[in-house]
Amino acid sequence: MKFVSHVTYCLSASLALFAAFANAEVELHGFGSIRVGEISGTIENPNIVDLYQENGLNWRDESLFGLQSNVDLSEDLSFNTQLIGKGINDFDPEVTLAFARYQISPDQQLRFGRVSMPLFSQTDVQYVGYAHDYARLPKATYWRFEFETVDGLSYEAKHALGDFTARYTLIWAEFRGDVFKNVVPDGVEIELQDMRSLSFALGYQNVELFAGVTDANTKGKNIDDFVFSPGVRFAVANSGADLLSQQSFFQELSVSKDASYKFWGSRWRHEDWKIEYERAIYGILNSIDALTYTQYFAISRRFDDYIFTIHREQYRQNQASPAGLATITNNSLLKIAQQLSIGINEPGYAMNVLSMRYDFAANMALKADYFRGGSYSHGRFNGFSLGVDFVF
Image 1 (tube, rainbow, N blue to C red):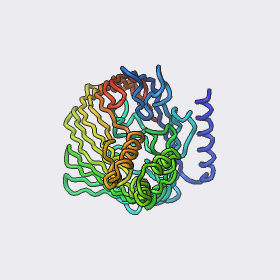
Image 2: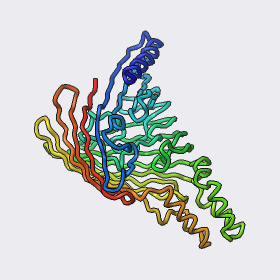
Image 3: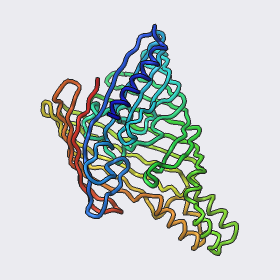
């Protein structure tokens, strides 16, 4: 009943918004996923973020519903919103997108407000399971980052020249929210200021190349306070290092520095076959935060209403040598820094996944998968999921 009450709340909120634009043309769309799954390990649960962190069958982590609205205010101006209720958040509805869109020309548009940040090639359909062929988009790369939506300005354009097509997006924005959920379940608050993003996709016949880069200035006092706990400060004070070295220790490891996120890859389609590769590198530069490296490689084949996909994905961090440790020369301080690094940086995992999609009804797809892999810190694991993705 709680799920139904949240849906009712979401609909009521949307209808109240629509009433404000009673004379405008309104479009309403929805999507959702209902999925059950389980993961088990030879030693313990590998604690992959947002993926079955509780033992036994799990109906919540990957179930969600969403509503999208588009209100045309004039021929060139519209207002768009998206509400999503995720099972992992007790289906509490959240406004994930809310922006005004100005259509400069058929191939150019500006967006103002809370917009989507292109962190992956399929950012726009990350939560719309029906729009992609995977049971879930490769988890190692497609984490549910809080900064996947930001507040600011977005410019989007597309061009065609013969058999070539090009799309690109420029964003200037800011973000305040939680990160480091691989260390703290609820995350730690951070601010990303002056975010600058460029992403593009270049297509030629049945081949597509894509890439993107995002830079930001990080304000991470809460993370610094979490990392440099009273116990850590006491250990540093009693390390025997001189005062200047102690001050340098905290400055070098601080996360209040520049952050960077980069992704790139390619996609090839031929008749019923598709091959995809995507890679991402991100982190807070020259800090205690070790750079994260993720990638996946996938091959899929369609058989009428069925699509089978096999892919390998990998997520890893270099715990031993975050860039912030490079200038720490005092042996006692270096040992403390290395222990901190092990505590907040996850060594990662790799897994192989076989998934199936069956389009059994209009706007509905049954999906199932089996995955098997290994965590570099928690040993081997395997699991499965079964569910339905839909749009309306």
